[in-house]
Length: 185
Image 1: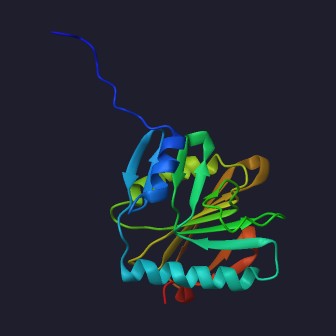
Image 2: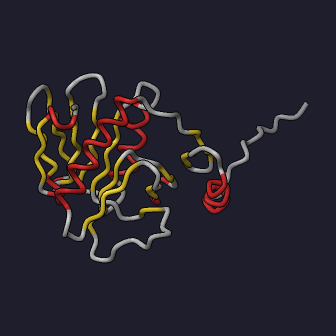
């Protein structure tokens, strides 16, 4: 009998990206392992759509781009690729049309689902905070009027802001304030 411990076969980021090009469903990558993405609910999709439209309209004419769900964010320090619900990227140089990966997001939004909430709150929070360009990470509840924002505050680090009920939600990184009713319409 052998005392050898078998290690799982881990994929390189390059192998994951090649596989993802032809995969029938989206998969996230974390340090050599891939995780299938589950579908969303109508409620989840409505909230994402409301935020997408508000952010895109607000940022029109600025050097910012707003993206929904199908582009990966590369969290290099965590050796991970995630598919957030929304990403805003504010950089002077726009992304090329064939780009599939965002390395320098400004604002990331996740609409919480029961199956992913724990990952969004712990793993993704830790990974996104390590991306130097990220200014805000936003968590939006589906089943109640609740938005949480983790905001970079320069040398201070990160601050936490919670919004509930009918409070206005401030997305400071892009200079936008939205009513909770619009987000959860």
